[in-house]
Amino acid sequence: MTMFIQTKVKLRKINMLDDFFVRALIAGIGVALVTGPLGCFVVWRRLSYFGDTLSHSALLGVTMAYSFELNIALSVFIISSVIALVLIQLQKKTNLPGDALLGLLAHSSLAVGLVVIGFLTFIRFDIMGLLFGDILAVTTTDIFIIWTGGAIILLVLKLIWKPLFASTVNYELAEAEGLNPDRAKAIFTILMAAVIAISIKMVGLLLITGMLIIPAAMARNISDSPQKMVLFSVIGGLLSVILGLFSSLEFNTASGPSIIMAALVLFILSLLNIKQSIKLKN
Amino acid sequence: MSDKNILVELHKAGFKQNNKWLVEGVSLKVEKGKIVTLIGPNGSGKSTTAKIALGIYKNIEGTVEKYTNKIGYVPQKISIDWTLPLRVYDFMLLTEDISDEAIDEALALTGVTHLKDKNLGNLSGGEFQRVLIARAISKKPELLVLDEPVQGVDYTGEIALYELIKKISDTLNCGILLISHDLHTVMTATDHVVCLNGHVCCSGSPMDVAKNNEYKTLFGEQASQILSVYEHKHDHVHSDEGQIKKN
Image (cartoon, rainbow over the protein chains, first blue to last red):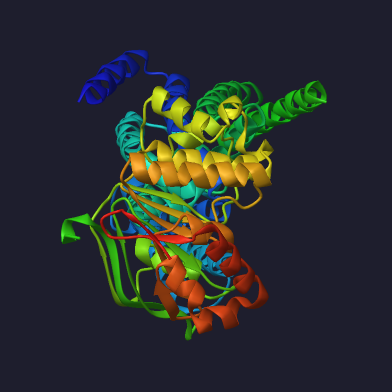
């Protein structure tokens, strides 16, 4: 509830500022707060290709939104969730390895999305904006969706943290000691779809997984406990958004790639740190 | 023994994977304060039986009734990925939030207090086993399932840990389902032995099992040696009232 009020207060401020860059910054910070903790689980559970598949299917979600005049985030969320369900069914039905199934779904949903775009001649699409993000496109509604959606995602993640984390360490241990890891996994899948839905405008569908993985990977290099890794992952994401957006403004580059590049620079810096810590140990 | 004391009961339980029975027709029960040990050669279904009892396997034959949710489990195999930065301290809190005192106490009991802030990935095999046991007992469980709990632990440590397990069963009054390949320990610190080989080939008190012919065929030379040790050490039996009767 307090989150909701805070968001409202923020919205009023934005209206007063009425500046696209401030809007982008607030939206980006909201996205980074959510991708930080979720990204850690993506790295821990080896789900980066799964994240890719969901984000590729987001294009189909966007075309659905235009075809049926739905909200883009909602439509992307629905399509991504459906793709996740289809994946689970396919895994039960065939003996194909997981990565082949993910590739199948990722590329076919991307292809279907692109074909459908061809039919929607009455709408002018900014394909580059969809693929790589567009700071100019961030509206106050988007900010509202990112912050309320993000707050819900983080709240749910906090609720399922124990079973999800325990089963990430060892599934059988979590199951044996009564934590119901299957339910936590199912809920986490929905959270993944949701985070892609809220961050698609900011980072673009080709680069969302990067926003999930790179700050978390950076955080791993400098953390010795799960809590620290989540914290550093959030900080890394926030820094990437801020640095990325400023350079995007400065050099007139697309927002998504600029943010991801900033994250990459932070990752490289964290590698320097890890080399030093190895030296110290020896 | 009243039914209230039963913690978990398997009735003709079995589990099939890829059309092959891993184990079938297992009936056993674990009661409060008792140690039940599963023995058997590799691939005889010991771990599978433990996982059936724990409810890890869902599509099983037969029935399994669990009467407690306070369970501590030491799995046979566990590997921690490098991507997960996990200290011993974090691991102790994995499935339940327990107090710092309880953590320290459990780590002290298994002799690994000094490892509390170490990363799990940097522990030796024996150290890791001690941490696993500490985690399982720190929750003060009603049912403890230990799958080869002392693998990789040095010889003196092994004896101390088995003594600890026996002590825990007495002090917490918890039931223990133990899987062990160490026949000597099995024969001295167990209330009930179940000998598996894809099915239950014999079960009963350690003495009964040791005398069983199927058991002798399964374990061969080693078994008869253990039996002689056992018989040598025990020249008396306890009556139900606890009195000592000379053989």
